[in-house]
Length: 257
Image 1: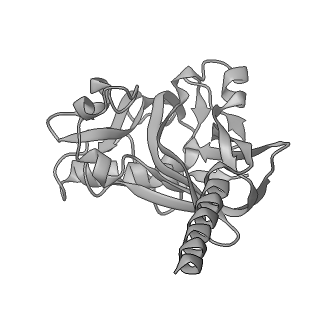
Image 2: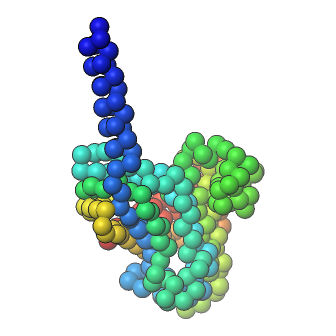
Image 3: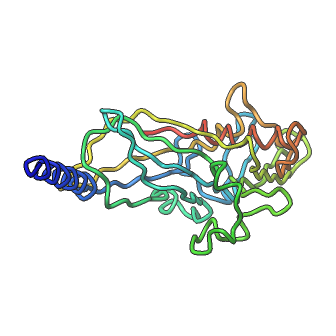
């Protein structure tokens, strides 16, 4: 009986030490940068970009939530990095700021070899069922300006600007506003990316978001002049379908370097 008790205590201690090593083992750092571009040029707000139709397109507001930011090890172990982040390109007021991108710094990442990174565009359904009062300490989820009371939903993404169609005599300046949200619009994406996290170096992953593809990707075009405003709306309505296409296009415009 004594030997059994000693063996049992030894096993418990071994298990505790193993968990401790897993939880508090060597860590590394990882920076994840999101850069908005228009084709190959950094995207600067309030700047004209030429469209395939020779119109002049400007972006004034461009931001979105990402949720469930995770990386996947070569052995398929999933490491959660962030529950929610807010990517906001409204500060891209000059070329230097636009070229730098939006950087997320992570300093306690498990070391190892990785093969993928994944996240969602918008707020995942569990958190979207809540409201700002449930997140008093979160600067983004707790901000009432990021929430639609009428739709009981966070605003997943905002895209605002103008297009000058005078060159084609199609009506001149048109302002656009596409705000997405509500259930059914959350977009999950996974990206294959081989990288290593080590304890003595900083790893970096860079994502490009090609803003041109949001409106002009073949087969998924959005005609601003024909439908220039959407606040999501009820499922199945034209406003909902337009907003959903917008957030799908934003997600599909993201690529990893």
